[in-house]
Amino acid sequence: MKRLPHILIAFVPIFVGFVFVSALFALLSFPILLYIGAWGTLLIWGAVGYLFAKWKTPMLYAILVANSIGIISVPLYAWQLYTPPFGSPLYSSPLIAHLSQMFSLPTFSLTLRITQVLMPNSAWPALAVWRQVTSLVLMMLVFTAGFIAGRLISKLQLRKSPLPQDLENANSHSV
Image 1 (cartoon, rainbow, N blue to C red):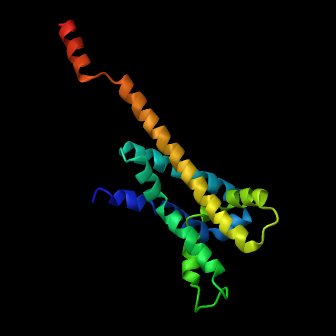
Image 2: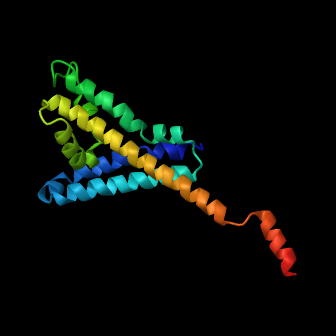
Image 3: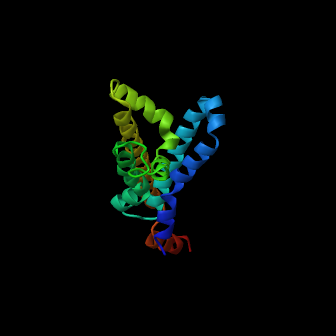
């Protein structure tokens, strides 16, 4: 039961991805919203990393659990994209292809730019898969940064707070 919040938080990017799909027309009408949404998603994901650190979760466990949906999504997306013949209902599932993009969809505007710079002459399927990978790496880096920040802040707060024996000594000297 203690791990249930950890698992539920792993679905945050999926929910944000569904919001992006629901608001796609508005987002395409105002492209700046795509970038605001991407940076907002990264900010939220860094805060999730911070929250995992506050829960005193081991770092590797936190990174793997929080990003598990993205880790699973990359091979699923590649499988759906490269299964011959592409789009055939016998081999690929539009539902799986659609759902596997939800984790990376909120950061699409940023990862598209990154993959275009890193892989300028790539064909579409390779570029699409690398966009998924880039999004996963970006989300993991932001989560890890939030996690480390949470740990550092916790350690600084522990150093500033008086220890129980210090409180007893202060009380005995003031009497």
